[in-house]
Image (cartoon, rainbow, N blue to C red; front, side, top):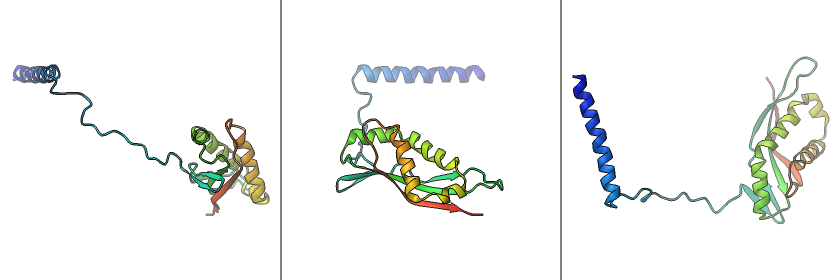
Length: 158
């Protein structure tokens, strides 16, 4: 019984190989034809132009635990930063921002996770934004961001 199954499997494999060879040789089968091309959208940026400025929104919503305070409590901060820059319609600078997306996320995570909730609440919003702008601009070569804004900036309490 096992020899019979092996014989059938071998015949099927030979048949598939022979059928493929005949189709390719007779030019009836052309690999890669009939496939739809992948089209990228015309909107190459996830940014929006506002007058002379553009905005980069790809960082997204981040959930970050702050450093422990004296009572050994951490706070959960939900923050959604976005970046403003003056290089309107500058595809190369946008691509640099996109390439550095993980580094920028790490900068934001590190900034908030190394401070307690009390320390963050003691700083002004402008101070936090400017410190983030300075740290992000250190990794950029082709241009600089002008500002960081937050759609969300909220401490979640238990």
